[in-house]
Length: 567
View 1 (cartoon, rainbow, N blue to C red):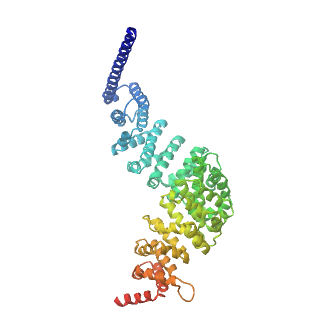
View 2 (cartoon, one colour; view 1 turned 45 degrees about the vertical axis):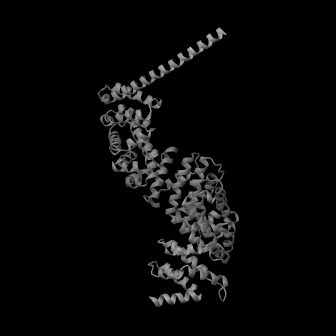
View 3 (cartoon, rainbow, N blue to C red; view 1 turned 120 degrees about the vertical axis):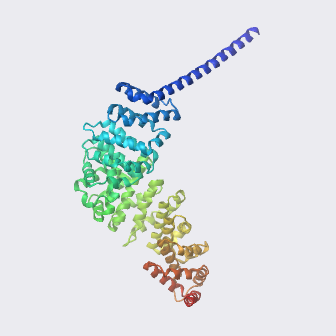
């Protein structure tokens, strides 16, 4: 028993020593850390007075500490602020400046440092540093690239226009433009990447940088035999085309040949970026789009290399996005292309991808699907798409999306199907498309509401659909839309009422009489008469037609007379 008590006592003593020892070590570490921090911060103001080698060694040590995350954000910021303020004094010392830029890049992982860099004076410091470095006779390539990378990373981190506006304000675009026109491939590449990233968040940078010499140089750079380089050139080239900086006449045959060739390259970014350039060119020139589909056989390329085999991976989604963008462009460019699309396997693959894509990619796929349903000459595309279950596919997933572009496109597709064949108006109601439109005309999104009411006007040329509109108390919404400030909403609402007001046979049915009674009770007549004063002549004509149809009801005829007499 005594031995047992002695062992317990010894155990407690050891535990106490261990705890005390831990506390001492902890205090020692804390004091060492505080001394380390203080000595670092206190020494920063005199860096510029150190010998060159000592300056480099000091910054290298700080870089290691940043990477090892030995400093918390507050302490790190104090050091960063003091170090960053030394950059203007070192702009002629490239080797030292290189280390300072390394330090700045590492420091961007802290939010405080990012916000500090975005202050006007600091952005100007970085741009002036870049200007000085780029104007040196013997350029320090690595240092310039790091300077550019800071701007690129700031753009990625903030994901807004703030950094880009400041970059433009302090003439950063001119520096990058000059570097792209330089003969150094590394600097060209870094500058093109940076501008492409910035253009994603603020297209204004394209307007600022697009001088004639720059645009000509960019076209020449597509010929550089380097896939990654060509891919980034394509990305920037597409931005410039979308901002109307090029015409089709600017694009040489060599450029077209290279772009078409890149669409079949193994590198996914190169494939996608080159196809997006061809898509943008197709939108600005119909003949060029037909050439791509006919002579260059690009529809077949898009089928095999972009739309097929979507396994859900990020790479496959990128390919589908680019492929759908191309189909949208060529379908919108020409009815002839829609026929070529119909004769290919594009439509089945598009509809298949309606089941497999999400968010941004789905938006592009439904965008392309919509384009294929639009035709002024025939409706065979719609026939095929209806048969392949397009409506059911769209309606089965529509609740997953809040993107107004997706919802608006869904409305257009339903409207185009209703316009294509009167039998499809029945199908639209049966699969739930009519109820969706009646939901959409109540939307707060103007684009969704506008497209939905126009689609509803096509569906309203069917008595069973009219009964559904009436049953869901949607007539009142349609009449309310006659007071919209949006002319497209107005036209859609008036045409919907006009199509309801039409009747077949020698005399109106009881349902027709009842429906017009409801419209009169909702105040449709004075609202339509007010629209006769619209400056839009096409709207005036549609309103006149609608009033003529409605006046077959005695109440409407009498109300028109009463209002005219009162005036």
